[in-house]
View 1 (cartoon, helix red, strand yellow):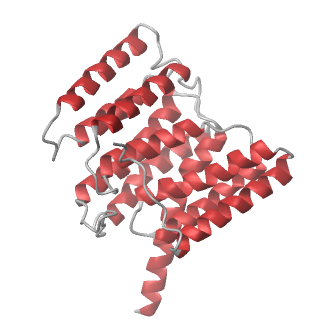
View 2: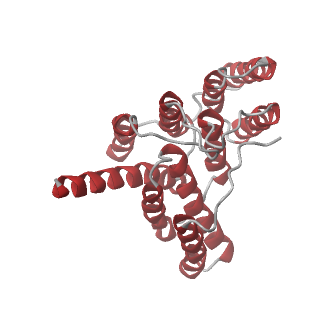
Length: 267
């Protein structure tokens, strides 16, 4: 059984808004780029930005909508997306935080392993396995049977060693020089850990109404920034993908600043 998918309640206002906004983005992207396919890519990326933010900051619906608005800037700088990368990050976060209320199944673990192997080979980047392995470690609790975790861990470790040291996939895409934009992006990702600290005391429930352990949410948040950082340093991330990832952090930060400013005025 696949447990990493989450149903969208179309009776819930924020969910209606993101569907409408994503659909309008497709039309806007089509008009700006002149290509319906490009518009569809941009619209899907806006929706995925929202979905990523819902996993990083599950308590606050509107931080995800703000993030989606930020990612709309891709309409005016469209080149290419690595949508599978975004989907992969979304799935491993769900594997870690378990917001679906279900314990991940063997199908989830091996399915995500297959996607990780595919991406590492197609992108020639073995750092995918670092995040995947950490996700396995985070899933060791509350599982009666751990054979699937052990098997997946052994396979991922084997692929990582072969790709890194025999195929040269780990350091093959390191930047030759660092410009100020690159440095600012890295600093923003490091700053995100402070943002997660601000969210650490928020009570979060899963799709079944059960309280999620704060440590599990924090682990998911930390792994998000770590994944983006590794893919940035060791891969060939497109600017459009980077915009999506930074929009997630920007949406959360702006929402937190705004809500705290409102509270201060009220007091």
